[in-house]
Length: 61
Image (cartoon, rainbow, N blue to C red; front, side, top):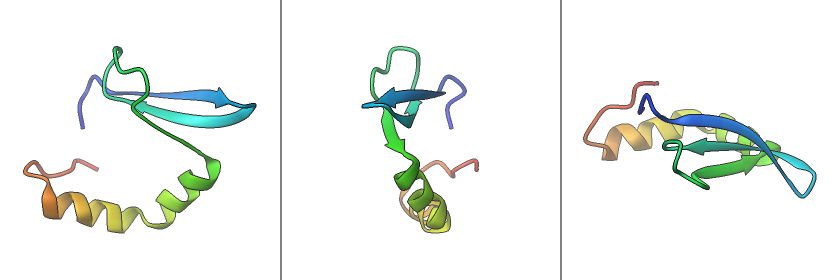
């Protein structure tokens, strides 16, 4: 994970969202709300395995 990445809480249509940005210049990055955050947490091990399988640099999670 890059040390310049940022995580920000935002609002979209009066709903909270979480934005994960590559750096200060990244306008959108990855954004999701509570329902998708729960889904991600439910499948975090599958996501870690996916990254480990296909990324050339091991994930530092």
